[in-house]
Length: 341
Image (cartoon, rainbow, N blue to C red; front, side, top):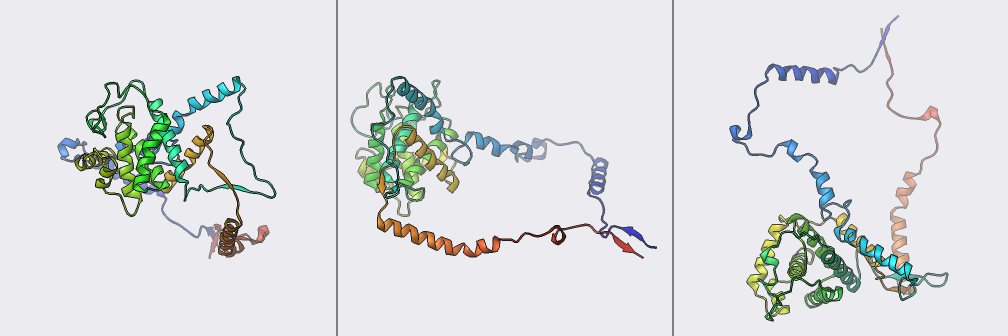
């Protein structure tokens, strides 16, 4: 009779690792420092858990990290809801529209085509919460963003220019003027907010009453060049802001890029996160997007898109369907003993 043994025989990985460790211990030499070897490269241990740290502190880089503006607005939103509940005031002055069997209400605001007006309002509201709920101890102040050293107009800057927080309407008018004159898109507004929070995180600075205009201007300038195919030149912004020079705009852009460490990449997942967080911010502050009844033309377009997608994935769904099989017909990798005579 023959003996049974496994059909696949190979050396154990543990044996290979043990043999390798014996060789290393035999040739063990004292470790040399980086200065002695003349190598100043970063050790791999210094790069461990870098992604986890970035995930926690850099929401503009990673989609799973919460945005800064949404976290800074939570306290104000809770206080507002608490005061409304105590005073028995209905939340919102207008009644929200609801769809029925005969009418369907939709907003013309999607992640791929946001509404320009309401997106700018949400971005201005996010900047407002950044300024209002900034750190009390204050972060590092940079001269390039100081409106006293680099004024945007020839009018005299008041002595208490950095003491009074701007209102949300003032921020909205400033951003809307730039977007309207430069003909920028709503997607550019979302990218502007991404660059603004990336600047605050990378440079470890705070946005306040004395520097918010130049920080927002630098973020818009960079976002318009990265996002739009036909970017606005720096000299065009000088025509919008009559009293600013091209040299000042160039220096603002250069230092903004350096503070961002030339990281101007915005992943689609990060863009989508900021878009939906802006929608959450608008709903919590009663800044709802306009709802319009579904028209016949829009319904036909949606039906055509749905039919196209249905035909595209019909074969995929058909291939994904599998008939149930018994245990006897299961196919898998199994080790079968081989009989050697």
